[in-house]
Image 1 (cartoon, rainbow, N blue to C red):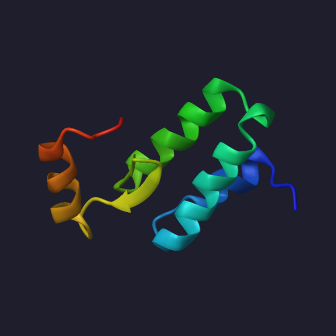
Image 2: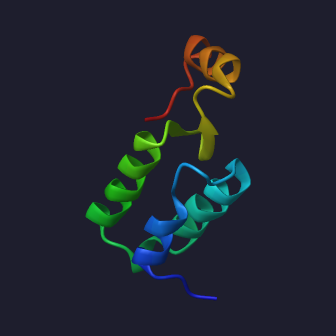
Length: 80
């Protein structure tokens, strides 16, 4: 099933579960040639707006997994 950029943007919202956000991000990564770098950057910014971040190609919610985030920062594997 092909998802439009607009549909992906709609899927990244405050009510989305982590599994849904990861599904969106992995779709973008898998089909990255279908999107411009500006579109990918925009989706990443949308994640930041709702308090989520991509670390090691996985979406985490900052407030839910702060310990995991801190461990990865200390470990030096933080990917922006």
